[in-house]
Image (cartoon, rainbow, N blue to C red; front, side):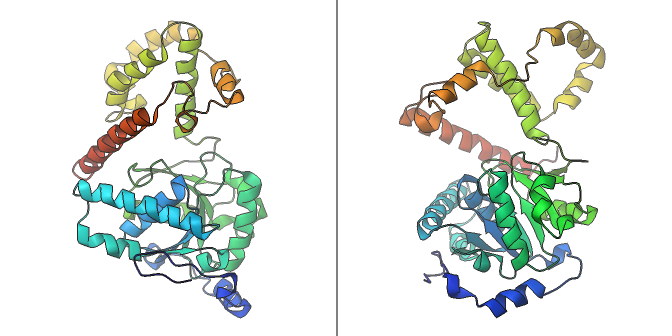
Length: 348
């Protein structure tokens, strides 16, 4: 089924013959260079999947976006159009550019169609090790030998995912942050067998599409961002559980102090600027009083057990009405847009 250039198109299971697939898998064995990357295979149409597809299309790349059904692809394009409208409202793109950007993305429902001529693969499917292994094992056979295979996992081990692959050196993590079209950071994480060449090209590609990449020296569960985020969440929940303060007080403290400062100076820069002697003195008495439990915080465990999963179910650590959620999402979006504009003017 083929639709207009500004709509999505899909190809059936018979869209590629076996001989064509074999030819695709055998083409090109030379090392991938940044200039060689033209076509992106985007696996996934969910919250992260549509965002990465849009990000690459905005940067001029041809994207084949894989979804399990026409319905999931259509939903993804709806989200993409909404994001583009947000860009237009804030003068980040012109109205005339929208059709061209949409035209760079083709929705497909088979891995064969998604991987055809792919130079770079970015995967944002279920955060499940077995599923990721299964998909990458199939995709690797459909791609050229020099195609880079990247997962957008939030914290799974790249070495564990790559166990099923023949070309483990071409596999890497490229972890985008949500929403991918507004958040600049991408964590580039090597597995045990990832080549430095794969890390370097992925880093350069992330820079080329307008992101702020950071490369880890080695893999670690949760990478950098989620290790810091979960350490903060653990202490925030402990403050509430211990009766020190309310959830609102904790969030207000973060938003109107550390949250603002950390956007320009990271925790290590802040320590240097504040004086290491000062931080040493505070650490000497405070660290022993902080939560260091290796268990899931009780408040989080209890909420999940009773199905209170947060905004998506109407309650979690807070109660959420549709109006409350829409308001805070819009506020967050506007602030992130302003930061996106600042990023184009200022280099921190």
